[in-house]
Image (cartoon, rainbow, N blue to C red):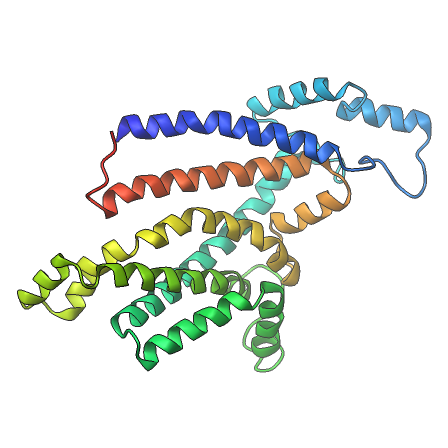
Length: 305
């Protein structure tokens, strides 16, 4: 296991290098510059700004300088927020986004796994049809529609939750439900499909023949094998929750990295966009690594050489 983890970690380095390189040059292909505006800057001011951010150098020199600084942990200065570094902005917004993603993940697992178990155990019954119909609705409704509907219901109709903002646990509920419900729908369908593959397995029939309670059979035998598709999905799903939080954070005025990404893209803030891309990519690769490690614990047939 140790050699496998070490090999995978070392394999992340060239992958991140490719992501950083492609992202750097693709972002620079966008027309205009961070200093483009309706009113042209005086030439001497523009020259000073270009020297400050290193834009007076060639593109390859800028790339090499960025990679060198990145290896030192320096993500550069923001051109949209000139008094703040990208490290500072991410340090402020990332904990909020992570909190929102964690709440959304917990809700998605609770709702999705429960609905999937009900659908598999009560296959082809009204419970199964109801759970899968609800899952299909969850997949079909986009977050920018579902979020305002929750605000209309819980904040503007029955007045039990705040419509926007951040500060208390009550502010987390609506954005967490909005972000997690779509993922819960996918998890429900994957849980049901995974459990149906093991429901007629020999070890399940043996457990029933020994007289074990159905509840114990589900939790000790069926669920462990049935969750493999869910575990596969969770790696990218957690990262998608972070990326998908851009829309949700805008809807609920949440001070995460989502609004910063929107502003950075609109204002061509190269360093801030790159910093968030590096953060998201690193998180995605680490989540996929954790998924691969989890396989060995959930399925004893998987051996890591």
